[in-house]
Image 1 (tube, rainbow over the protein chains, first blue to last red):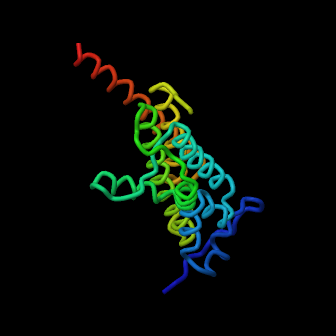
Image 2: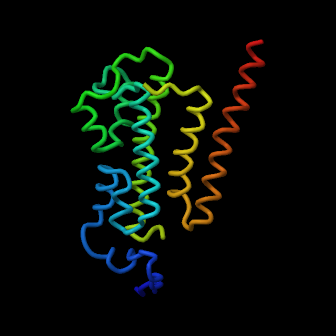
Image 3: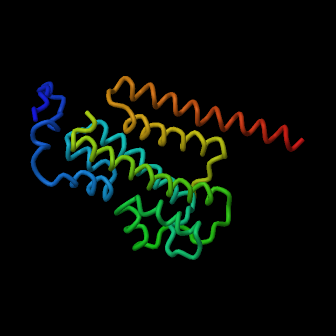
Length: 142
Length: 59
């Protein structure tokens, strides 16, 4: 089995994914990216991508809360279960939000419904971003 | 409490979602920007088209 030759990263481009990424725990960017948006990319020194992902996901979560969106707690029915699955994608933001009692429980106004969807979608986007960090780490993506 | 209009909520949603899609679904910065713009236009465009369709159906 031959080895695939890897291009050396351009200076200052911060792409050590080729060499240094071959060492250490391979799932670390995935877990870090799930817990804190953008952290997986920061670990791989993809500063620009990580910052944009962090800003987008945190802003979406924050705007959802500002719109009185709901943080799902239990699994009363199948829709609440799916909502909880989406919310869990937010990682530490969801856990801290639950601990602080953030998020309105009964959805009363229209914007609260938008807010609930913003929070759910932020979680789903965070999962996509964490998987992207994992793909960068394993070399599946450059 | 933040209370955007429906269209402002659509714009914010499209902006953040397109940014994440662009970064995660493409490999190089140029194609990332192009794909993000493509997704943004599709999000906002489809919202406008569907709004008109629903408006015409309701009349």
